[in-house]
Image (cartoon, rainbow, N blue to C red; front, side):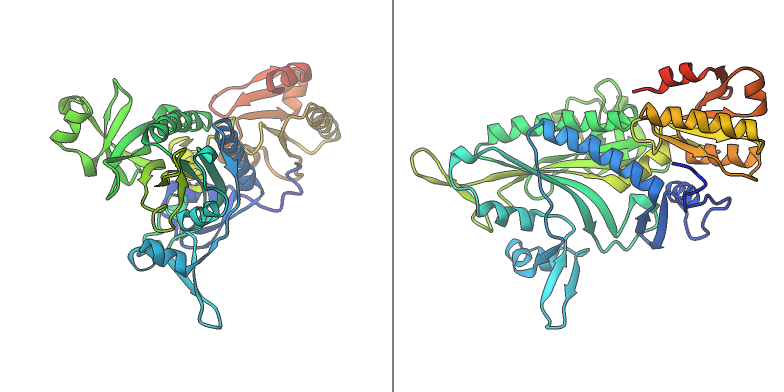
Length: 415
């Protein structure tokens, strides 16, 4: 992509109505555009990051046998009345059409996925089943002030598992703990993310959150560094610590952002819809369920919160919009010819590159914008680099670059 044709532009100043670092940097870099509090549009650079995260999650869901679907955002009121959540869920968006018919804008999809399955399963031989989607969700969030961390409209991966025995459910549930750890490692925050015991609500002793440590987090957790697990402040008690074999004096209090969660749903949503199966004896049983969520926008916001510096964003290579930011410094013909040659070679090698080919922009401005955008590698073509026989290559995390040849650059960057 040539930066001269990229319609988005960077900003020097942060939006006055944003208080979170993630929204400030993402808006300044032209990754997202704010529509209203808690609602953002993804621009070309931001969409590339989102798609990278989508693909990582999709790969991991498919590895465990997940079947991808895309369910309706409009959900029948009757389904929500069956589960008792039409009145009980305070942040549910309710929409009426001209005839007065009411529907819910989906904040989650238990009320849709269970009736779908009821049309297709009946025997114990059909199980287990794992269904997931990556889709927009809607919640009437009254505290939408944390940028991508707390939105009214947001992209989410939600998986629902269906089982005929508690043993089978627990086997898959424990497998998903490891899958989630893998996902957060792949997107670059595994070293800061802890599986955290939290309240399971009315239908389970515990749920498990995945919390990423940052001073800007909204949650308080207590970390046992030896076991790499944590306990949410809301469930911290001597009884819980005893059950988990944790010593209170060894726990470290931290602020954190929740980036994912998994729940044991038991029969909470299958029972209202009579989602059942027959066993080999012909007896009927209600299906057991689990659910597994990751907010993709929230994950992007968390990465920016924890992996940035005073110059801008520092994207992990796995989810960066481009692998390399190529800068042509100076407007003379020799630099332009060499920079275009390098750009074409990178494209032929299938290396994702953003090429700052803009004319009339100072070196200082290009460097500042490059730091803000946070692309992992920066290659500079200038009169100085040409005089030294090559291309100046520097990682975003390094203070000083080195001169390399085009062949060396390709060897470093080819996947």
